Length: 331
Image (cartoon, rainbow, N blue to C red; front, side, top):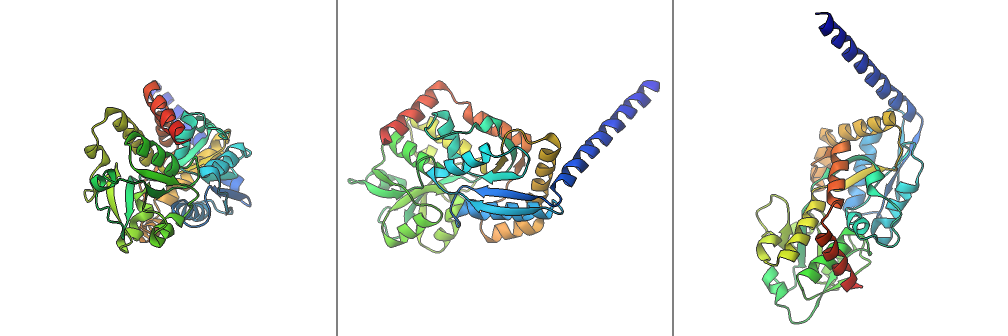
């Protein structure tokens, strides 16, 4: 009995300590301005998610003010570097794409961050990758794409971005007749397709949902996701080396729309930020707005996301070699 009472007392003390820690974190943000960096130009999926996250986190941190700052360039590397280099006081957060995982794996020039050391707040969605083709193109299927006699133009963002890296590694490993044109940020790639400037793109499904619904294009293959309306790319490919890279791409789609801070955010503030993020993601109003924007919400938080990022970085030497070779070929 005495032992049970003692354990109960210890549990109460621990709970009180945890509550006090949380209270300290909440108090810190009152009257403070939090800069939320979006590593793309305004418009597009990352900007949409970033602004929703910032707005609803602010609502759940009374007295705080969130300011969204767009920092595009180098395929999200500039924005991610800025987040990583900021002071670890909890007043700078940001979102950037999972293509940076590829860049860290191959030690890409310009990368000044270590994703394993960042303070992970959460991820907003799982977002499968798709191969998109413009409606006016005669290419109706993945087999049609493979059969092209001359290279067709695909759009991607800058080197370092997920769209760039994934376009490079998939077109090289699958020997697709594709010419990768860079510099298409936000919705520039969709406008380029409508103009006939490019034929297709490899991108996140949610970014192209409205584009497809409006009849401007079609999906011809998908990587990951539960949807059954598009064939899985893995079912169309037999080469074992290519299948390894497809699996790597799929792992990135599982942890889409990340939010993180720099290393060293104090435990109480990080706990508060994760709590505010969780409350934001579970807010019915945010979910309704995201649905209207056709942006999926499938969140995960804190340590769970940190572990997923670490697992994505922990690739076999063979996969690292394949990734490095694919990127080298593009250069």
